[in-house]
Length: 124
Image 1: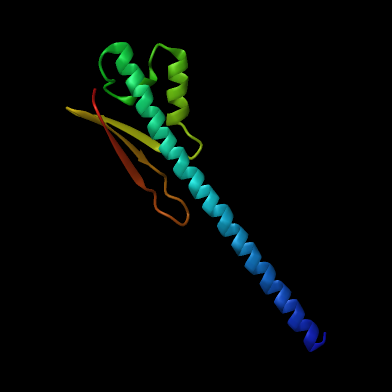
Image 2: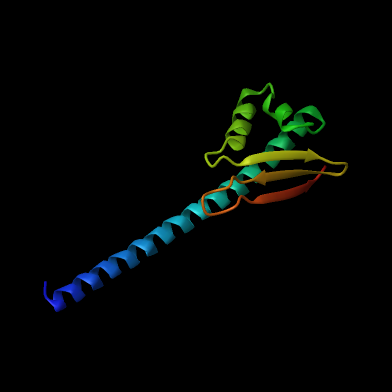
């Protein structure tokens, strides 16, 4: 193989590797945005479901288990979809004196440690 041909092959391989890494980074960023959006939507929808429960029972649920065991099958299905999302996020709920807190812990991944996100809501 001539020297010129080796240089061209090397340049083509380097460009291919560069574009592959660029594309992989874009896919990873999109996945991270999807995960973040899923968490934010999950927290918001879970807070809504807790509000619906409070409206129906005139009290807040003492735990997520109580919310999951709601008699209304549609509400139970919505809560289960939130709590068992496709990313394996762990949802917690704490009822405090004047507010409740929803905590989401994301699982550890190969190249990253999981995160903990908390949102507090005032009781009505």
